[in-house]
Length: 240
Figure 1: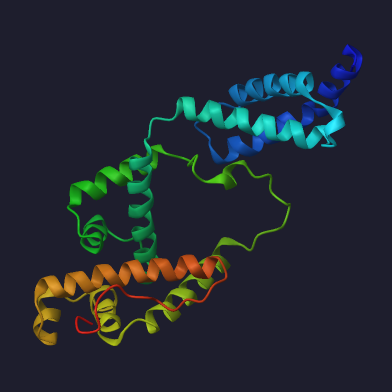
Figure 2: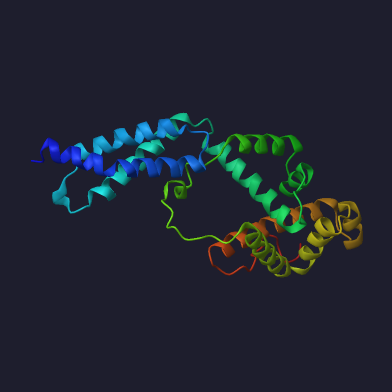
């Protein structure tokens, strides 16, 4: 049986781990007070030291880290105001906004996001307001990952790379869908005018525009994961 002195030594040696993990999470979730995270983490460390069984062959540092991060997650869930449904709506809205912004070279307007999603303006405003209140998502496991120390490229390089990827994704769209994207988001032409030129209804253009935004978003997601960026449309061949 482990003595009290050994247990206290485990706690003392791993207190810096609590501080490191607390600061790392606080940098991503600034709405959570650092002092609260440190307190929760320290308690989790003590609990881990009491429950640790060296015979299982797991290093105490790894075991304690898991317990500390689990305690952080519980603490954030107890403070979180947003349901999964709200978070899903936030994620979808911000994804469309970011895709449009990358393509336009400027911040997409609320009306543009609403049109691309096929929802009313108030729904977009509400989702973006909620997004501003939500700093981090508990559904994103990377929130609790300790960084490897790898140096990331500067932001401007990432933006250039993303725009290049988006341009390739646009080129891979079906011909008519590609023409609609360019007409709406590059030439800034009215949907009514585009519909008349193509000989289709206003709703058909809106449908293909929304589908194009979804395809571009999916393509960028696959690109970030290192997969092929060929868009797969849900719109029938005839409708394209």
